[in-house]
Image (cartoon, rainbow, N blue to C red):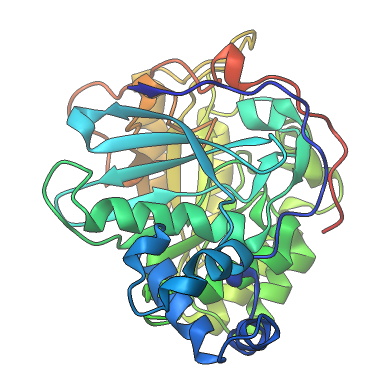
Length: 397
């Protein structure tokens, strides 16, 4: 584990410095001209940025006399790594980032034999207030800028390319918006990030649309907006209860948009894309894991183009809730499959570094219920020094 000093000052809610990743290609070229350089300098900077090059001295296609000024103006450092923590033999790495105003966010990079996935944050904190989620309990500090979100993915891609993660040099293949925050509550910046992830190199990371997952607790207008955008990224809906009475408690936004409305919007997305959406469901002992709720969920989803990811809850400190016992998990899976609903159980990779579901929701799925007991480690709660109060007034979306 690499440890750097933490800064506990409350963040100043100033706008992050202008960054090339916040601009369209045309805007970036205009900015270069305004700095007294040819427009194509912006394209050169973009090529370096998306390749993970941060040292101006390595940007040898730029005149030496202007490298420092250009990079300071269009590639300011927005994300400072405070700490890396590794698990799974180094194949899982969680990074704590300090932003320009002192706010803290995390991302998790997970390497598998056939892919590498990074889970990124879209907000500092979260305003959705789901009581079983450590991030939700911390409240919302502010939205991240597009460049702050994109930077997490660019850093992960650079770590893979340079062989920082055991296994030799490789390629980042998947990005999931399942880190801190509700992505669709920061829609404009998340949308800009999607452009950067999907645009081919050298002006983006060139990922496939189906390799990018956007998760939401159910902001119906934003789901419909995403549908209208014409993208084919994977949609994940954090449901956690099949009935409104319970979901009103577990996912407070449900008091505004009910289960039927959320799934109706997801259905429209599935119809347009022709692709299944994912229903995320945290299994909480004696809260939402009863057989009758499995049957309700099965009935609700049996005719829909959806599959279920079951997530054994990682209880947060101070919470009375914990994961459903293995027999209850197995019965829940069996009942959903009997109803014809494709069901998987979420892998809890990185749980020993507080990088699993509940703090970053950063994990991939595995088929079925493992033949051995599923891991049910402690729920994600950042260490005390990471969860220092940073304020509660969010910026404007």
